[in-house]
Length: 124
Image (cartoon, rainbow, N blue to C red; front, top):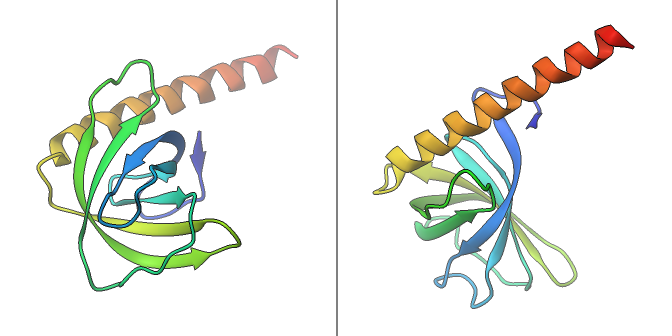
């Protein structure tokens, strides 16, 4: 499902994110767009905002089984008690074409969901 209206549609999504340069534990994908994502890590740590990070994102979608290998730049960081939330901007990466395909699948799924929702509302 899409959240907030931004320049690029952002989708609530779940998946595993490996970023060994940042954390030995895998992160959890919270949302994603063609331009970036929000990822939660189960540890508290600092991140330099001027470094590029290699991310391996494994979406949970049953119709998409490939790992997205992306280079990302941290835009913001929020440390909480036992976790770190990071907003990333994606840079041109080896996995950019796969990311485009994945976003297309999310866009189509969101459109189908909205059509079904509108149909159900008109029936009730």
